[in-house]
Image 1 (cartoon, rainbow, N blue to C red):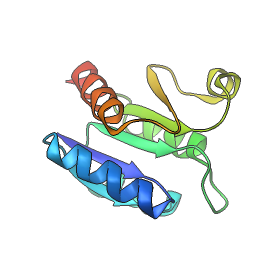
Image 2 (cartoon, rainbow, N blue to C red):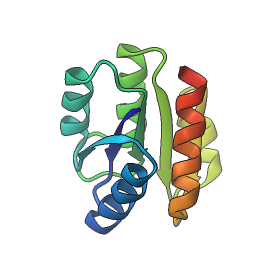
Image 3 (cartoon, helix red, strand yellow):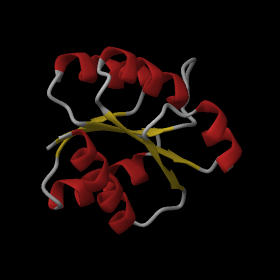
Amino acid sequence: MKLILLEDDPLILVCAEDALVDAGFEVSTATTAADALELLSDTPECLAIMVDVRLNGAMDGWEVARRARSAFPDIAIIYTTTADTLSYEREAVDRSILLQKPYSLELAVKAALEACEKVR
């Protein structure tokens, strides 16, 4: 199962990547919105994108998810954020999952498995 992980915090990125790889995912990582979108265009067989909502740069995770879903209507979206749930309800694409930070690595793996099962 291929998944793109977009996270600008290096420690969270490494820990989440390791947990997802250990669970059997093929993970491509990005630290910027532009890199994540480029990875997505190069990996059309990707099942999910786990995206940090608050990113450094001009584009936030909400926009990355909208663009990902526009290009790949069936892709699973998993948001990670410290933002309140009202922001999620207002900004999120449909059929997405929210992981509130700080999240456990077990919960991240569970969310990724659940998200990918929905699109298979």
